[in-house]
Length: 420
Image (cartoon, rainbow, N blue to C red; front, top):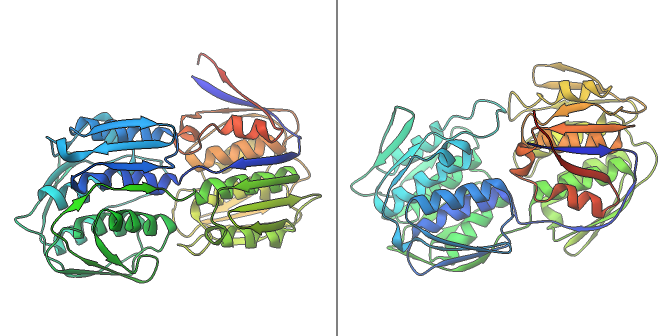
């Protein structure tokens, strides 16, 4: 097993490059199933465990998959199976995108119910509603979702709640449906737009991604294409917060500043200097920052995936901060870990009240989920003494080479093997 050992207190300086977006990549890779001819060459793919998991699932279905540096080439013309039932399917939440892609191309699919981070109840009822509206029969038996249809026919679908997963999954299914599908009350996240752009590169006819309404005009077939994934908004936000927490000056390259506006606004409110320059952002910070209030919301609001990293910074901000987690009901599991380091935090339901302390102290803590892991790394970087972060397999699901990136900025951090 591995852990991260961090000796805190070093300011960060220098520059780092952000990888392709995890949340886009884990949807775009399954979407390649829709290509009945040609190959999909997808660039700027992050080197993370969730991507490796999807690659193995695609191979298990019969796809030919080749990988290079941040590149995945997929030939889905050789698919010979519509049952996705491996351990890798059960490991990750994004495996549900296989349902929409297989249903669209083969009019049937059987996919084991997926796993993912334990951050709250994440039902797939809106996915099922969408598939059913398109004409599919959906059954859940023995832990598997089975879908089938003689044909898929476009229709109007209004989602009861804003759901990134359902928006993407039903959009996938609608690409090859007959007629026009109108999706309302959809998610607007950058990775939703990126998936739509990828599908359009394959020959789909999708308009409105990033707005309240997405319209999909069904086409007869989709073909392979070349595509480059957008930069990771959440990885960028995490490093922005780390730079602000540790002080110094860090240039974060390969970003889309507009995707980061809600994060930048809150850091500026705390007293951080943010300079946008084309496809990079410079973060300058010195002295103690001010506490703030945040409420997580769907894009373009403050992202729930950045709430946990920011909470680590708020533990040492001056005054009181309040976090309202409106997306997931169990996204404060990392709070007990921060308390081990001396944080003063009280949780009341979906509200966390943080009274800033002068400093954190190093401790042995664990990553309770992906973004909580990033929070504990940031806490370790600002703490006095040595911090050991365990269960870092969660971190590896979404942050490529996290210790190397922080080392390049001057942090004292290393990955260590140990026997439990």
